[in-house]
Image (tube, rainbow over all chains, first blue to last red):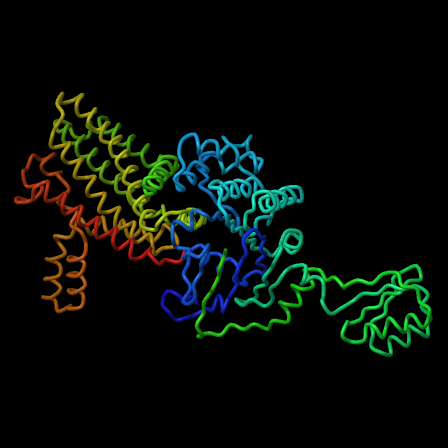
Length: 314
Length: 260
């Protein structure tokens, strides 16, 4: 709950947000602009404090420096002291982790190589492009070899090549190094390509969450593609409220809900000698799911109720 | 020891800031040109040089103090650099202490550079290094330290550097007039303005007295009434340190749960 300086107005920024992130997964935290994603991330990092609820990372309170040692954070926009050179930025953040001397220098070199900034290490950050700033941001988040990475809009504003490179780096961090990634974004395609699980936040509330493969593959709907369907059969299926559409080259696509007589439809098709081409669970895009969740949530902002966030990362 | 990392970075930021470099260059130009100003007061060249230089050190020192102390934290909040810093294994008190120490490094370096030029100019004229002058510069640092501590405290609650800089200038000006405030309060009572009298009295009680840190009369006019009789240099240093401690505690109380 945000309260204005004079206490005249209150805004419920997050309401009963409960989520847990498993070790070694990429977790996507989605939501439209103003949904409360960055507020939630700030709470996870101890930058702001919830009026109720708590955040535990690796079983400990997030305000503990011991926990912060294991977290790497890339903020949205990646702002860094622009009077420093690339390597000086990393030296500064490295010192805050207690890294010194040759150990620090080796890590800086390795991290700059990983993010592809080795050649720009002596350039002042103020001369960096947006993509380079994102990379130096990722480098400072990775410098201490943290177990958990919290990334706020890591690919926003990047060109397609830089976006692809950033995505490859992040997937490799999970696959090759076993890192846990908490990805806060509204770039749905990126999330769909990278994440294992997602939660969709809208107006401060989680309106949908789950494994991405379970969400995009509908449990209920099956898509059947058949050939040799007569006009009479098509009309019969439509009269049963079954979706039938042209699939090209004489094929017909039939969408049917499992619990609403899938086998009956199959028997009808067999009776009419229709040729079965394929049968698969119907896949929705993350965009469809996102839009349905956000439009259908109807989440409201109560003015005076208690707010809070509960998060857990293992 | 993370506060030292923050202090070193704050110092590095300060000495690379164009505004601060500009203040220093102008201050050095004013001090350097003081010898040419003596043509306006024949027979009192030394007094003129001392007066101009002391004023320049005090005014530009004040400007550097309030600008650095008032802008460091708001700039980091505005640039969002503070997110990446506070998300590291660093306690908020360490962050504040580091910032404050870094600001002191900046002040000391600027003060040393301005004073060095002042001393060189005086030495070429008098062929001696005045201990009272060294004492005056030393006390000027403690005066600026108080100013910096309170400006820093104001900067914590401000989203831009404008408010703390204005407040810093107010503290500097009124801090030099604190002695007059008591008389002004009595005068207001006599005039029947009790509310105004209470307000002035509150300012008198709350604001630090900076006038004692100024040895101008003793240095320029050779009058031994600066600081006032009974006040030693050690008293002034303790007074400054107590004020700074209060300033830092207020800063921490404001910043401890601040939402950044």
